[in-house]
Amino acid sequence: MNIRYLLLIIACISLIKPAVQAQRTSLDVQVLDEMMEHRHEDPVELYQHISNTTNYISMLVPVSVLATGLVRDDKVTINKGLFLAESLAASSLITAGLKYTFKRHRPFADHPFIIPASDGGSPSFPSGHTSEAFSTATSLTMAYPKWYVAVPAYAWAASVGYSRMYLGVHYPSDVLAGAIVGAGSAWLMYKVNKWLVSKKPASVLIN
Image 1: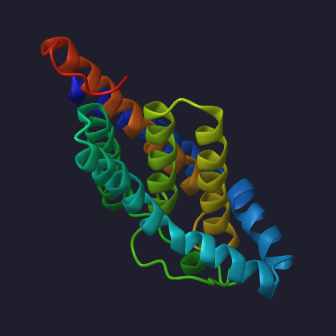
Image 2: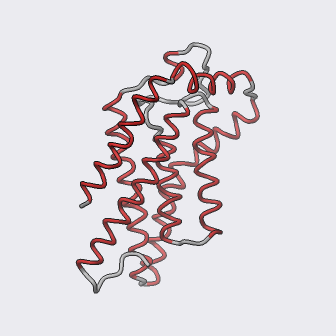
């Protein structure tokens, strides 16, 4: 069952990629060109900071929830923390697989007018930072379905995605694909956990 959902996510990304390539000289490059023309030092520093928060927040969220559950000896909270960690791991694995399958160059490698303001060593498609951020935002919202959780979580995830474009290290389509992979990974792990609950009624993984 989990393999079927994984293949569905990969198939969706695979359908996006050819369309993306056809539009690279139009939408993708035009958006980045516009950003480069209006980029200023202060926003660059701000978006670099936002981008740098991705790994820390993505790791801190599941660790904090898991630690809280362990301290309180609360199985539901522990399982929510595990769900958050599983979603992040699935997102990272799928993103890495897609990156080295498509091997898309970074924008600045193909277009000299795009000046990177951040590091970007791995292939460009999809955006790993965006994937992590949307995996965290989606899994956290699914674990705690409250507006005051969803709004800041997705606002942060969206700002991470925007920062990767503003810094000149990703195309808009990289960011879109990263968001789909991240959110899809959380949904995938939710379905897996729900299936496990149906097989083991005595254990509750997620409310």
